[in-house]
Image 1: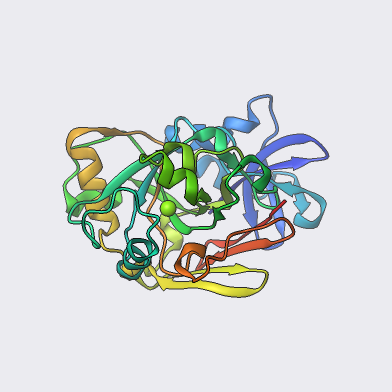
Image 2: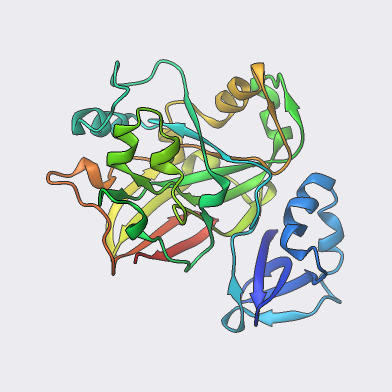
Length: 289
Ligand code: MG
C-alpha cells in the first residue's frame, strides 16, 4: 500500500495511491492526522478493505502533501552513514565535530518537525542567511509500534514502511552552531513524500537505489546496502536506551554527492529543482526559491 495525504481543492483527505489514482479513505475533520492514526492503530487493512467502495480522484486533479503532515515529534536522523559521504564531508572542512572520518557509532540527531513540507512545496533558501543550502537524499524508515530494546533480528516487526526524505541543510549554520539542530531545522528544509510504502511492497531493501538530481543533473546515486550502520543496527541502537513510537521517522543518512562535496561547493539557489528517486518509493521533487 501507498499511504498518502492530499489536498483536493483545499480539502484535506487521506488514503491510498494506486497507479494514477488517489483512493480517499478518510475525508473527516481529522484527515490531516489519519495516516499517523492508521499506523498507530495497526489497522491499515481497514483502508485496504475500502478499495472497491471508496471515492477516487485522478492524481492530476489533486495536490499530494507530506504523507504525515504533522509528525508526532521531530524526525530522528543519522549523520555520516555512507562511507564515501563521510569522507566527502570530512574532506570539505564543514564538519565541526570531526574527530574521525568514519564514525565508530551511529551519529544521531533530530530534525525539527516544523521543517516538514510535501512534494512540490518550495525549499525557501531566503531563510538561510549564509547562502549554503544543501540537499541530502535519504531513505526514511517509518516505525510501526512502540519499540524498546529491540534485538537486531526482530527489527522488521517494528517497521511499518518507507518514505523519501530530503534532509535539506544549511552547511554554514551546521558548522557554526556545532550541533546540527539549527542547520537542519529551518522551515521548509524537511521535504517528505510522496507517500509511505508499506514494507510488504519492498522485495529487496539492500538493492534499493537512491538517486538525487538537481536540475536533472544526477548528483547522488547509491544503494541502501552501502549504509555504514544498517537499519537493524539503527533500530537496535535507538531502542537500547530510548523508545521509538508508532509513526516515528528515521532518516537513515545520505550518500556521497552532496553540494559541499564539490569544489567549489554546489549549493542550492533560487530557481533550482531537486528530485529524489528511490526504488519502489516514487519520486520527491521540490522547487527551490
Ligand atoms: Mg542527513
